[in-house]
Length: 323
Ligand SMILES: Nc1nc2c(ncn2[C@@H]2O[C@H](COP(=O)(O)OP(=O)(O)OP(=O)(O)O)[C@@H](O)[C@H]2O)c(=O)[nH]1
Image (cartoon, rainbow, N blue to C red):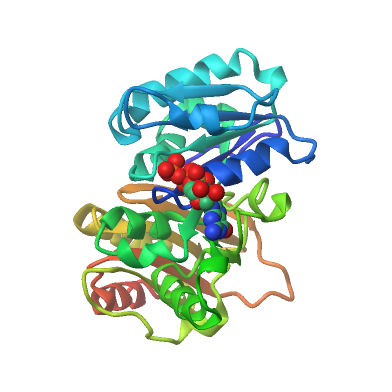
């Protein structure tokens, strides 16, 4: 269980996306925009020389680089160390952006914020922002990284819209929604997006409502193959939270490798408060949240995003938790 975030925690945005998608372009916008926030940037660059650092516009912001290869291998140590150093100058910034290399799997970065107690005390994961090259993504579906970056996203910038037709864009958006029903999607050129759409959005705040697009709830739009897709479940009958806990524990133990993200708001039997949780692979985090509002419909919503998901098994398992 995670302690509730205090006001003194610093929000962190994880920026991800395939090579050349437009991450540096977005970073430059973040650094030059007059949003009143002082932003510290951590850039992870694969290889010896941090070319990205030279491309990022010279600003007052602090830029730290991790050059020890792929972020996933060194994340626990390096990220924690770098953030530890940054925190010594905590008064100099009020938001952190971590740009992951185009090839990195974002999971270890995200998990660090769930696992490390010290990090949890000082930092609050705000959102995972994924930039997608609307034109070139078509060539990258085979590379699992592109799919995983979509799976982990809270916010997706469908970038380079100038290079594709309206029809192509629509198809791509439908495909992405099938993969990740939770993410908010914005169409952009040169990563131009209003800053309040990507910074300070509190997508990882457990007390935030789960935003399942109702239009997608009933749809079976995804392909049941090896690609990433999402499953959403809604149930109005109260849930036995003990059964739910042991069922989710079992699901994550056995299928956690394939489950990238999971989010839920639960209407627990006999509970006047919402039970909310989220998971990243096998790491899972839940808490008792605010009371249900009198006018609010009490219902449980659960979303799984991953690959090779046993949809029928998951639905059955969830139904077996009804009180
Ligand atoms: N046509 C077009 N080009 C764009 C757009 N956004 C970014 N670019 C260009 O795409 C190229 C790659 O953009 P970057 O921002 O460097 O991409 P990146 O994701 O940081 O790339 P890596 O650091 O290699 O992972 C640059 O030449 C940008 O000018 C867009 O909306 N349309």
